Image (cartoon, rainbow, N blue to C red):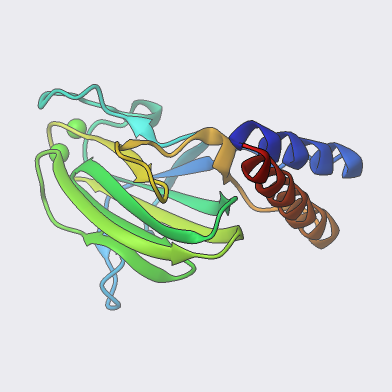
Length: 199
Ligand SMILES: [Ca+2]
Ligand SMILES: [Ca+2]
């Protein structure tokens, strides 16, 4: 089922010749919390940007140091893009992060713990329709150990898994390709439904 909608998504993107680019991460020196309570990059110096297909930067130990783009201490990383949902339903999300972390989906807070924490675990849920949803993830590091993973449980999943690169994309370059890709998801959903009926 998963393979079929991914194949349809790939077909829709190849039709317009525009790839849904991988998620990207932006790294800044320093960290700050805005008046709105959100981890902010206002006034921070940007270190750079890198392609980050999935948010998977922790080895499971309490002494990990991610050091994105070589920066060890006092930094912020932001990811802004889209989460592609094949099946409507309630999704669970979990981060393990050091230090502060926030996750917003469609501008709604799903995970909110912008505090100093030593690989703290935070969870939230979001009820999502099929299609693309705006994803906004923010991390700040104060000192010493640092890292982050973003996991999810799709409806019916028993176990947590890293939210895969196949459902994480950065901004869509053209409105036309955005609509076509959504059509691809819809086609894939129909294929999946047919497969379920025949099983
Ligand atoms: Ca560090
Ligand atoms: Ca730290």
